[in-house]
Image (cartoon, rainbow, N blue to C red):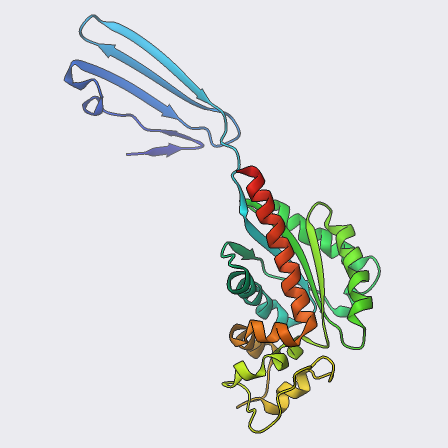
Length: 277
């Protein structure tokens, strides 16, 4: 029986379990220190035939933290309560279904109001917090700070690079990516409307081929939503789990940007993995 006293553990091995058989009486004491101190084993053997006493000491260093280079860890920063629940499973779906990466860990997103994230100096600070979370997580993996905001009235081609520069400034050694959903997160659902027939009453309405050009957003989803009123926190995760990724990617350039950023992070991770082999 293993008895633990304080921070030490001692486990005596009976003589019957000795590899030397019945002619040997072996006393083994194993002590394991739980801090960074090395582990010490002391073996004392006494053989009846000849009365030989031998003591051997084996010292091992502290085991190193295992680095999992083949895993991607994503820490995102979002503005809405719906994205907090919908983005993690969506990122996992993109990585597994489009790029065959099944070892991906998506932490709970950090949420801040859009007015604060677009303010100069704020995104740098939150990107630094996200990067620290990635560094502190174990096992060590390739990290990505992912910023996702709705475009609303701003042009993604102008807002995106500006926010990306701020995120990269705050993330330090961790990779960073910034995606501006044009116009809203729900616009991606409009792009994949055919695959959401269980939630949307499409009827004879024409499916838009370019929802971003037509500037379709949450209102389009609300007008066609089945049953009760559309709720971001309840329905965004459900729709994100059912939407056709390839169809959405072909009709929404901003969603394609999200896929390309994840693909780039996966390619970097796999390059580093091959370098460690």
